[in-house]
Length: 506
Ligand SMILES: [Zn+2]
Image (tube, rainbow, N blue to C red; front, side, top):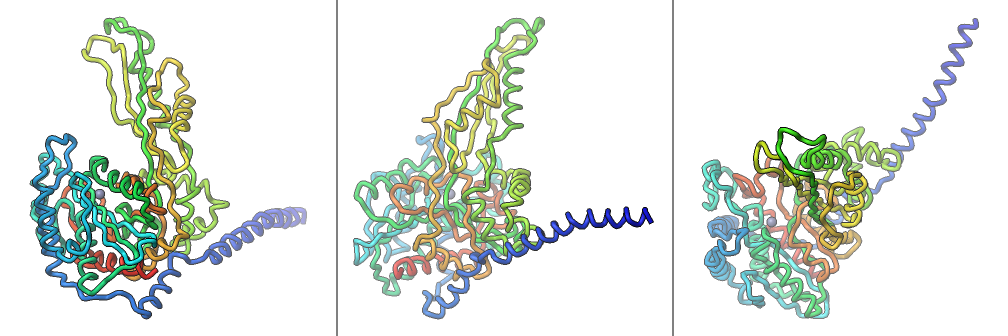
């Protein structure tokens, strides 16, 4: 009897947290159901938009493909040492473009900024309306010495084989550059007469910083007070099987890109013979500091772009990720833990710390007097150079380590572009029409693009290439066997034609 009462009261006690848990789960589920399906609603609009008259024009795919193939054969390589640059390759590439895109070259004015950058203005009939800038870059990175033989088709062959077009620049970024020109050539052939001015900004030095390309173009636009609603550059893409928990492809539009800051740490100790070492050496002291830095990363946060992305994708995630993601108010710590576990997702939620160079000692039996480390941080929006310096000082907690670096040397993350602008909704609709199988979500670009130079010249800068990327494609960017799927290239042309047309009608 007593036993029975005890059991009942135990059940009663257990049932309270159980009831609370059920209520909590119901609340979480409700929250998931109430999330607006913004990743899909644009698609509905797109379908009605398509019926109201989407831009469509038959593309001569074979001819377009041949042009991209030829474009990939020009060795427009950006070299670290400017003296190694082959200027004739860029000149030949320009002549090739002029030959093959006669309408663009006849109708658009090329503004010469004294470099290899191609900067075109297609004047609109209403010059007071804000214009737009479509960006891509002509230059490519070199082939890593000794890896030529690993390519299935030679890197500058432009080979068309196995449903792909092969070569350095196919993905980064000649595919986009040629697709923009194909789209505009098609539109002009169709009698396109824009109201808004369209600018094409094709830098020739993106891979080495963009000083002679994007920087000059953006400065020119600012100095001439040209109103620009948006600039669209490379950055993110249509991702297949890359977004955890989402089986559909995700067209991810970069709203911002991370910044960068490099500091040096040094430790100094007395030198001398290695037979009589001190308790702690300069390299030992430095190593301790570096270990602390790696174990104590900068704080993570989902605020801003990661939260925007998760909220959009939550309704399309598999269980239980959908429930977890829809309830960040409760699960934020858990989600941050999950993101922190993999380098790619970790880089989206915090300023990352990368120890890149180490230097100490010169002889095996001599104590090093100095030990030095170089550390590269990639700043998330919101973190400043000073935040990093404060963090490093606090974590290292060693007066004997000198920190070399100042707040002024930091290049902060770019501003975050709006998802509420008219330009963003045009972009969204154009993506939905061209990639009806894909969801759309905002994202943060973790590498640097030319787009960062346009944040003053344009109201908003979006970073999206209409390129489909699968997990195994990521290593092809700047790597071996760079290639673009033929069908995807045709989609890219369609996307840019749609976007140019829709932007003008907006
Ligand atoms: Zn690129």
